[in-house]
Structures are given as structure tokens and as C-alpha cells.
Length: 272
Length: 155
Image 1 (cartoon, each protein chain N blue to C red):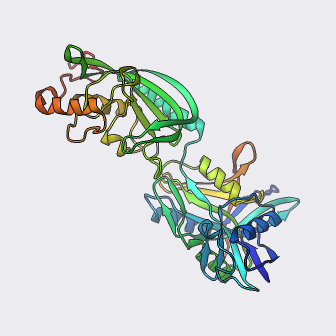
Image 2 (spheres, each protein chain N blue to C red; image 1 turned 180 degrees about the horizontal axis):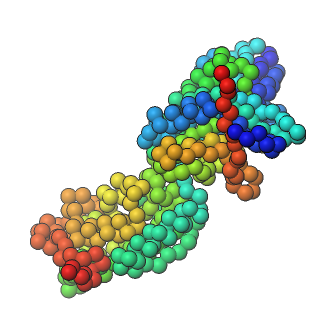
Image 3 (spheres, chains in turn green, cyan; image 1 turned 90 degrees about the vertical axis):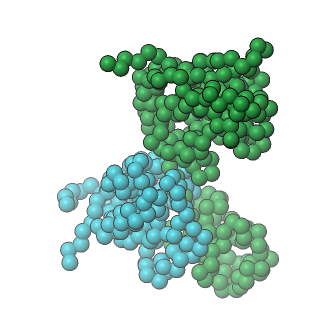
């Protein structure tokens, strides 16, 4: 039987001799070959107001009721997405680095531009994400560590901020445009110690789920300071034993939660 | 409007640009998407597109991505055949609310796969910054901005 397919971006049409047993996939492939369009699944076939997408490409023409003389349309399905070009992303990050310096945060930066695998907070397993840069930030906040002597105060903390390629936008699939992992030691219900202290550095933190594009690296670090000083024992990293131990500890010692330092970065602050 | 000898790559009718902009504003805070219809023409050996209509697509969108919803393309195909039988899809448009006009890597990939003719164009509008710009994808170089002119018909 003969079917006709019209491609709507160039108004070219292709007539094909087909069998009812041919799949949509081979038909579309032949049409694309004839029209010299690179083979992709970004096109849809349309027949009588119905769309045939890739989920139906393995069906046969017979199964879909396509018969002799059918005239179909081939329509592209473009997808728009927001992602800053590399130079604009770097420019934005330069401004944010300046802001971090002004607030007294110390950091190192490393350009990555490659996919990396990370453990996930809300499920087991790894996720692979396109990383643009990694910042290792050191800042002051009143926190605690667990040593052989017991629970001790710790004021200096280090964390890695992995800035993802879709920074500064929230992506519907990938979520917040950064991932944060603890590097230093800590005794905290929502933060796992860094790899050098026997943990995987996971940080369970509401702010990162509610990322808005007006946030910046500096607001992120300020948020981390607040998180260190204000543990949330009601939403702990429940699969990590040391975090559960910290949960019990802070429930028994609620007076140890809260800020002691009025100034950002833990430095003296001129107030008059 | 000046009528120099230079042939620009894009000519768009004023009411089309108005419709696209209005669509982008109505879609806020999300992105919107649609097709540009018209014809590819050649003058003095230069091919340009003359955009005479646009078609909105029912979309699935967030603040940072947009694509056509299920069966939206079926409606698009029907509407082209019914209302614009002599036109072709010469490009697409989508909005970048608040973050300016450029092609993201997703946009570039999409344009390359969906719009294979060198004259095919991408229009990006930012309804918040009140900007609009035409682009095309250049193999090996990412993309380039295109000069364009607005065509206003005398009634």
C-alpha cells in the first residue's frame, strides 16, 4: 500500500510503499533519510488529529489503523530550555564570588565542566549531573563534633558547593542548580561528616529544595551557617547513624541550638 | 523603515510579533512555545524568511523549560492545513521570562534537530525585559543573532 507523509517545516512530501506489518519507526526513519533530516525522535507523526509519538513507534501501521492512501504530517517537536551560555554563567559567578569575599567567606574554586556522580539525600543510589564549578568554602558557625572525649564545640566548617550547569535555574527534573557536600567533621542531625571523617557529606536542607534564582552563593553559605547553628532534629538524615545520634543529643540539649555569633563569618563587626 | 539594498535574513509582520509577545506575557511566569509560519524566499541569491503568521502550541512549561503538550502538534498540523495551506513552518519561538534572549544548549540541540534548513530561525522573547531576538544555529559555532526587520502593511 502507498502512504504519503508531509513534512511541515519544508513542505516536502514523501510517498512510501509500505506493508501493514512495518513499524512506525522504520517508516519515520525512511522518511527522514529521504528528506536528509538527521535521525532523531524529536518529530511526531500526525494522522487525523491524533499524534503518534515515540511511545508508539514500535507499533505497526496495521495496529494503528493506517491504511492505503493515508496522508500524514511529520511535525518537529522543539523543546525550549533555560541555561546560561558558559560565558554568562562565569560572569554571574564572578559577581557572586565578589559577594562572598565581601562577606568574609574563604573559598577555592575549580572549573569542572563534566558529569559527576553524587549520592542522593532522599533515595539510595547515585545521580549523575553536569557540574560547572566546584567551590570549597570555609566559614564560621557554632557547631559541634563528636570526639573520643565527647561532644565538643567546633567553629570552623568546610563544605563543597558543586555548581551545576543549569545554575542559577531550578530544573524540573534535576532540581536545584547545585549540590552541597560537607568536607569537615560535624555532629549534626541534618549533616553527615565529610569523607575524611568517615561520612559521605550529605546535607539535608530545605533551602536547597526551595532554590530561587535570586539566591546566590553567599546566601547559600549564610544558610549553611544558620543550618549548623539551628539543627532540625525533626527531619534528620535517618539512615546515617551519627546523624541519629546527633538527633538524640540535640533533643536532650535544646539549649545548644541557636546562634552565638551576631556577625556573618564570625568576625568582629563594627556597629557604631 | 529604511529600504537599503541589503537583504536581511528575517522579515516579520508586525501583528505576528505582537501575537508572539502577547502569548509570552499571558504565559508568565512560565515559558511559552509556538511555531512561526511563512515562506522562504530568495532575492539576489540570498535566502530570507518572511514570517506572516504564528501558531501557539498548548505546552507543558515551567519557569525554565517548555515543550508541546500531548496532541498539541496534531492541532498545529490541522491548523496549518486549514488556515495556512500555502505556508511552511519556518521556525519556532519561545520565551525566556526575565533572563534575556539567547539560545541555551537545550535550545541549540532542539533547533539543530528540528529545523534543518539554513534559513530556519528561532525567535526568543523576554516579556519581562521587553526584548526579542532572532537566532540560527551555526554548525561548530553555537548560534548567531540575525538582523531582522518588521514589516508593517499599509491598510
